[in-house]
Amino acid sequence: MKKVSRYPYSNFLSSSKFLVAFLSGSLFCIQPVQAVTGDASDKNPLAFDAEQRLIDFSRLTWKSMKSDEIPEGAEIAILRGDFKTEPTEAVVRLPANYTFPTHSHPITETYVWIQGDFSYVSADGKTVDMKAPTFISLPENVPHTLICKDQPCMFYVRYEKPFEVKFHPMPKVERISLPEIHIHNH
Image 1 (cartoon, rainbow, N blue to C red):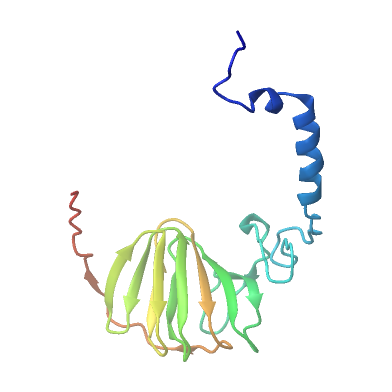
Image 2 (image 1 turned 180 degrees about the horizontal axis):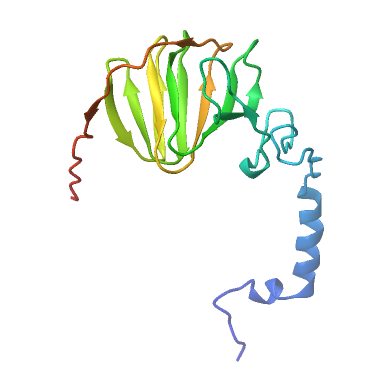
């Protein structure tokens, strides 16, 4: 009596003919590997083509932000763009216990707070304590202050147009609490 397999192709799949046929066919489907350029730093991002940028934050080149209005300690690494002429993306790091002065921009800005606990101070002085990670989106001309707490802080920031900044006096701080969040499991 002839043995009938529940899997009619099992003999073919286990044969060397299948392996040769599969490998031969798959070789025609392999796309050439694109050349990879860069070293994943902010100065020379890893790229598979002109539109892709991979940057390892441990390889960033930091520059001091010190100016007449910004105290020593704040540093910036540009990820893409040029503050003077085009939209820009950057990473900023602040030392522990650092206050970035009250300022505003005539352009929208987007932050993603990556590291460290901080306080966000609004134009009227209302101050809320936050933890990383936090998303912040600000429309044009909104004065705000950022206070890094007892550990170094780092955040990503994006400006949609060439950069401009205006500094303001620090408002009187009025601490507010985050509202409680009630999570309901259904």
